[in-house]
Length: 346
Image (cartoon, rainbow, N blue to C red; front, side, top):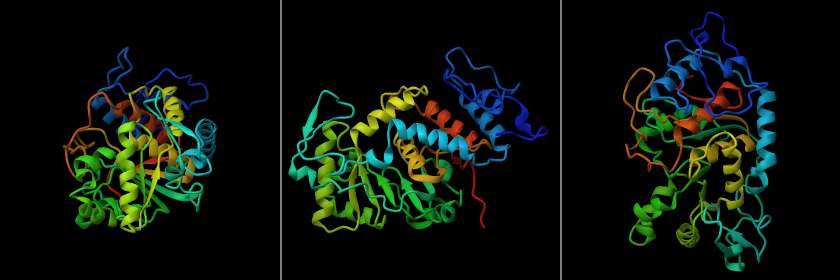
């Protein structure tokens, strides 16, 4: 990506946080260094102010999709992880008799017997793949007053994370269309009482997602398995429109190794980065909304952590700045597009 010579982004700010080989990377991506921004410390970590300056510079560059960069990155992702075949557990990729190894508790296994096997779709369920335009909607407070709802709802496929609210006035900012939404099992336990006394509330809440898939990490930790299976049986017994899918633990393990080579070495990838990676393989054009791990906007206005609350994530569990740095690079390279501010109404 290149900015016009008179653009403010001609000031230079380093984008890459890890020590990857940068041969073949555009000069704009490698250097972009601002005199107003202090040099990164030896630890290769930036302050929030550094990032906001970087994003200001990037915003002043016109974004263009770079087909070759997209194809190359997608091919690399496919060779390591192959979301099309391996993203969710299916009867095709996990036959009866398989000893499924957990993603994180890798010394633990669960035997796939008939009763579990029948929970899986026969094959990967994304029948309209490849999708043309996909929206990955994060839950950042930056979505409040963004007016991005209409644009999100025009997408061919909409990914969401962790059962966020989409009804009422908020829909004008976040949209209402959902094709796939992830479910953290802790939400089922804490918010819905493990589907005992609050089962009906849960069913009412997920009804707002229409025919969406509910995606759970049943095989990441053993503690997730029972809760994830309970979601499956609850939907089946109540004949809900939504269908349950399970992340394949081998896919998540391979994906973590892929991002580790890029410098993301956290205990676990965030759901947002997992789903963004999936979207790049499933979709020709990917746009991200609500990805904003900062406490304020570019205009210095305070931003809540989520658009619906200000509950912060567990410390040390994810590496949000490093992940965001990688997503910024994908934006700069024209592989996907990040929405940084309000959407323009047509």
